[in-house]
Image (cartoon, rainbow, N blue to C red; front, top):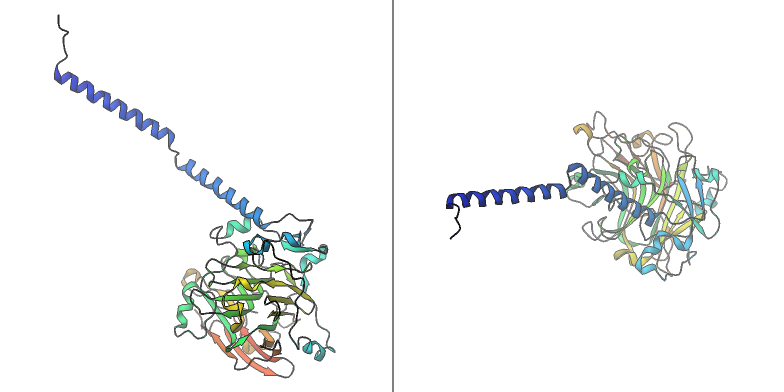
Length: 428
């Protein structure tokens, strides 16, 4: 006897019901497997924390001793051969050049002339609590908070693209696209093998945490496009980089216009430090007072004619280390422009110009004790001699916000006053 079959309509209903059940089960299973919004955020946070910890481990080398500075910094005394520079693949078998083969001729002429005037000595704050031993270098420890303040881990310790002033630009307003403004003196048109300056030290106020104010010299080669080479040194106030408003010694380098290469201080491999007494990025003091005591620092950068490396000296006593010439393309030979002066970041808070100060925060016409200065600016020529620069130009994007005035006399050689308050009635 044949089995009775369900009507066709019933079979169709049963099939639809079964398909719907399977689809619902699949959706439930997928919903259970896929993390919700909170879970996704938690996983991202964990991943970022791991990335930050990995970056900190790479930057903070194992110290033989650590010194706590009164300003809250931790200075690690790291074996000289363990410093971040030697993470660079080209420096794995590098023999450290402990001192330059040659200093520029005429380096100490100024100190002979001024020997009857005792100079106020500037030092670093961490020295109050100790010093690093021989064969180590002092490195400011990077904290988790420092990295987290950056726009990304990759950009930590790096300047923005196009942050170098280009006095030859036919469209100076283009320089304000990324908010960087300058008041500088400069020379170009020759081959330069170094530069020197005595820089007045202040503590300019910063309006926004992501703005900075610095005073430095630039050693430049190449064009102002994608291939700019730059070596920089001076002092800066940068809450974003350091987490406070202290005035700090700093260096910077790039070989591709601030894109992929280079960094501040020792925050990447490149600069090789040889000195155990001065820490890059550490606070310097004392600081000049408006209408009161004035303090300044000497910065010298020059190319060793024998080895070809670019050396850095702070004051008359501290040769700090060098940038190996292979880091650069144009600067492997020489520089084509030298700049000295101030730079600020203007984020235009509330749609108006920032009140972040440059230099002392006062205009050049106020003069000594009130406006910031660079004095005894010099260049190193092809014979390794320090010389007064010829044909010094001046440049600023908005003189009503920050200005510069050049001068020359017997005591100060070639000098200039620079800076300003930023936002004011003439700079809205």
